[in-house]
Image 1: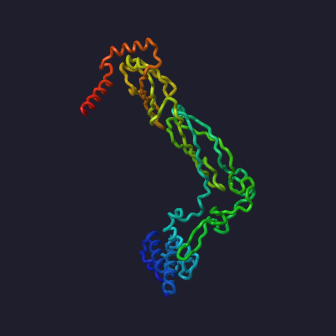
Image 2 (image 1 turned 120 degrees about the vertical axis):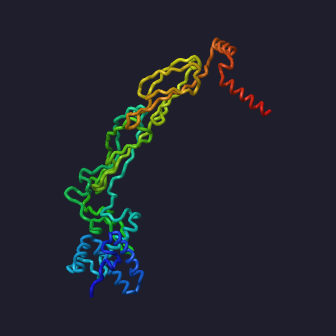
Image 3 (image 1 turned 90 degrees about the horizontal axis):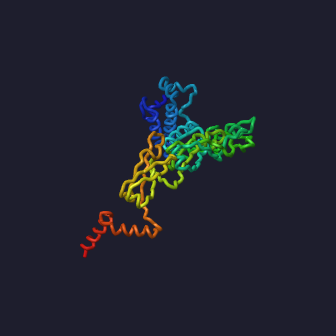
Length: 376
């Protein structure tokens, strides 16, 4: 009796892609699965044919041989026969299971778990505004896990080495069939590592790493802002039993300054000036964030809130040649602790004053009077 063509069994053409083959197998397997067709010998036989066809065609080498020689390609025991439920069925159904649930279970099948990677670490560092302006090189001490020198990270005692796990045969995962599905889970014997250590290292108790403080050099670039994060690749915790190290993340915060406030690359500073300087004009000297000084001139009749812009006196822009500006905002200070003579002079000034000397206040009270007078 001639065997059915594998492509016809799956209901696909000879030019079907791997995706088409898997989709066709999934539909046919669900249709003829014995759990869905109890006590139906024809459905069981059909299911075996579908499984055998997919086992042959999903492998590129087997498919190429079948396309060239037909069923004769497997007469020499290459596998894929239609008889019985063998280990190949678990493999086929696992392909389908991974395709459906792979994204939810961690992205499909893997040879080993990636849990051997060391953990990422966080280090909080505070810098001054001046240090953020110039940049700095700093050294930090970080308590972390490092590779054990006694066993070079293998976890095995010197002179021995880990051996392949006999439960999962080095894959890190084991499978168990439950009805229609094949469930894959982490190997309980090796915790997903694929290896077993019979004689663990005494220095690290088989983990392949130790805890100690490390001193690291960190280059902080000029222009960093509050919340800037610096990543040092591979400077986190060492991986378990030779696994890759994690990363170290340095989170920078800028200490509040006594005089300056920062907004991006711009610097703001509030400067009180005397009433006479505001009225008559004058100048004053202010420090800048770069450690220098600059003189600011104010004209006659300067009012509180007036801003003066000093170009390129602000913060540098990170990884750029640009630089922000500095803004000086003046506040006019009312005289205090007057002497008798100062009071007499101010009283005399008040007698000589007119609405032209204080146009803003005179105008405000005039408008207020009109407002309430109109309501009456």
